[in-house]
Amino acid sequence: MAQTTQAELEGRLLNRDVFLRGFWRDNKLEFDRSGKPVRAFREGSFTVAGVRVTSVEIRHDGLLITGQREGLAFGHDQMTQVPLGPEGGVKVRIHGRPGEDFGSALDAVFAPNLPSLAPSLPEFWQPYAQTHFEGSQPDAAPPTVTPQHKAGMSPPVVLRQMDPKFSPEAKAKGYSGMCRVRLNVLPDGTPDHLQITVPAGLGLDEQAIESLLQYRFRPAQMDGHPVEVELIVDVHFVMR
Image (cartoon, rainbow, N blue to C red):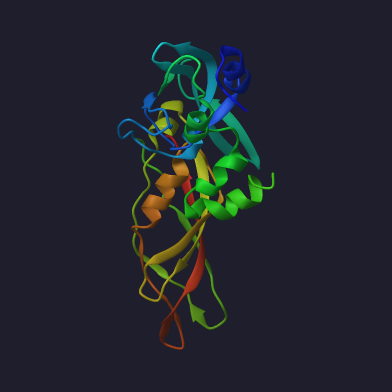
């Protein structure tokens, strides 16, 4: 469907919640006619890449979309939208001319919902997204590590850990949360196959993944030999 007139564009965007496909964190964004960024923008988490569109304006040099940035917070099996900035704080400019069809550019810049965004999420989000979305600087507390071991197996031991940092968005909102991650400890003591099973939101999950990738373990042992084992790790973010 063509997206050329003010009424058509407002019908698609105005007062709707959309997501920035590039997970861009900058609040002033500019794109060419195809929806490609005109320069590199900072990227973050999809959980802080929501926008509530408050105005759409066709100008002589293109399209100006204004909105409020929104985040996603998770807790008690519920997902909550959290305003992250003032109304009108996000400004998206798409180059073009009056009468031009902006549909393709809008498709490249915005995802209308989580199911359409899910395929582009990082691998560590995919199991959760497929289940829940598709078909449908204060210090953080040290993570709690729970080994999933077999009889006769000695569990892995943490040798080096990195405390996670709060995301700027969570810190600004005074938001605490817990991210649960399933991972495998390889025979060489490195973590692999990280997957989020219980998210926190507001960018904290990516911080948890980043910290866990820095972990090193004494690997699990079976009959005197190092073996791969699965762990469930709870990463707690608590505002002090």
